[in-house]
Image (cartoon, rainbow, N blue to C red):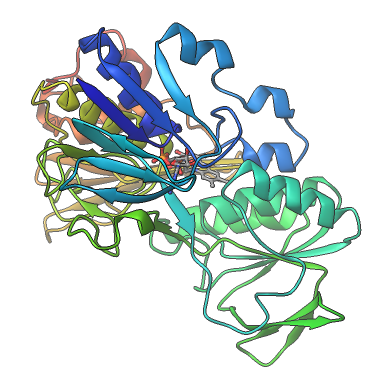
Amino acid sequence: MTYVIIGTSAAGLAGAETLRRLDPKARITLISDESHLPYSRPLLTYLLGRETTREKLFLRSLDYFREWGFETLLGTPVTRVDPGAHEVHLADGRALPYDRLLIASGAKPRLPPIPGLELSGVFTLRHLADVERLERHLAHARRVAVVGAGAVGLKAADALAHRGLAVDLLARGAQPLSKVLDQVSARLLMEAIARLGISLHLNSWPTAVVGNGGRVTAMALNDGRELPTDAVLFSVGVAPRVEFLAGTTLAAPEGIPVDEHLQTGDPDIFAAGDCVLPRHLLTGAPAAFHIWPAAVAQGEVAGANLAGAARRYDGILPMNSISLRGCRIITGGHLTPDTPEGEIFEELDATTGRFKRLVFDQGRLVGATLVGEVRHAGIYFRLIANRTPVKDLPVDPRSPHFHPGRLWARPLPGAA
Ligand SMILES: Cc1cc2nc3c(=O)[nH]c(=O)nc-3n(C[C@H](O)[C@H](O)[C@H](O)COP(=O)(O)OP(=O)(O)OC[C@H]3O[C@@H](n4cnc5c(N)ncnc54)[C@H](O)[C@@H]3O)c2cc1C
């Protein structure tokens, strides 16, 4: 069999390795439009903040591709997929035939439709090349504005402040991550942002980027203010990278629709990672949610199914890990219960700033937020994902005698 995989990141590599294990003789070609070896996207902000080195970013070496028997085309954009002819067309004019195709093309940053985006000093952060461009500009910058206080915007603001830059952070809502965080966690987060010396502007968004001589000098804001700045980093969400599917019926604006086997509308094409629109694990509703572990999990399922395994992907459990210097927050599942019988349990240690918030509904844990002490987040998320009835646990999670660490030792009730 001949397989082609578009993407050499979290989903693409997980897919390729799973496929290789199941089909040792397969011909597998991996394609990326990036010329770098695969690297960790989550570490990009740490590179920007000089908290890690470029070398530590890379996940695989050149030898890796040879050892796994992958043919690899780096720096090679895919321009078109022709499902009828079973061909992937490349920017250099070649057409690669496939029996089965995995699309793991990820996502690209969105930009708001405002004037001034063409100015020098306007950035997004998705690729290693973005950090390299930003680095060159920051050599002459003192002040940077980050637009968007989601997980990536927060990490980027922290990194820039760590470099000694004056950072303005714009949040569109009345608190950062308003769809994800309750008020107490948001307050603890905002206190941490203030301690880092970052100026947080709530209910704020730009109406234009303002420049002089082709370079950014300020941002015009919704409330009429003009915020002086030397650079603007937009972090206002992502859109799936599916341009090369134009003319097919495979793509949709929120992501490639897939079934529970991550199969697209074409039986020979599977998709995984940030480019797909998966289902919410708890509700079954479409949930565009973009995190590295989900991309890996989907890649593994899709890779197995390319080889004919018929493995199911149960859905994504939305999760956010917010990691600033001096503040760790992990949150996952539902923010509030769905039914009136649901209950929210909160425990705040005002001295240490540690906070635990558990959301229960219909006898099960359905959401968890941990601030400060996040070591056992994985246990809470397993209880949520496995839909473990609270009554089956040795100790109720609301009890002071509940120690999540003790559950590691035993298979969780309800685990598959
Ligand atoms: C700055 C930053 C920080 C983040 N931090 C975290 C974090 O802390 N925790 C977390 O869980 N997640 C984090 N994420 C999100 C995480 O990185 C993504 O969910 C993950 O990278 C998705 O993997 P993927 O394989 O689906 O897509 P991507 O990583 O986007 O990779 C897509 C691949 O497809 C290739 N490709 C796309 N289009 C084409 C084309 N036309 N031709 C050829 N190749 C193409 C690309 O070159 C790339 O190899 C962060 C993201 C960013 C940008």
